[in-house]
Length: 155
Image (tube, rainbow, N blue to C red):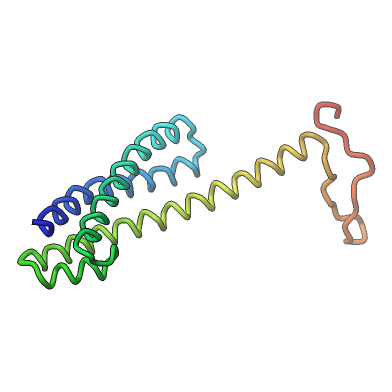
């Protein structure tokens, strides 16, 4: 019975994991294009999928712990060895694990892109506000600072 419930939870998570992966890929495109309305829409959809996946993940963990098995892939393998649904449990579990790993990878790429955009924006704001002057090359080829930088609003 526990094996059937576990398989059902895994099956129910495959479609949301695929949707989350698609949303993360759309988020990457929206981040590159700085499409804020699309990003807001994606964020709302992403949150609901993450909550659902977390809830089912906790239930899967509870099932394995109830059976006194490790709450990871090794626990699933042990259960599969003692179940008629074993091959299906492993195949669907591996599929879900792969989808979630892909989601993590795309999410990390998106995080790096967000960080880069934050740095770029901070640098642009510093220039506009008249922060540290940019280094420029002089006639000798060495770098020199501009004399007295002024904010763009005073230029």
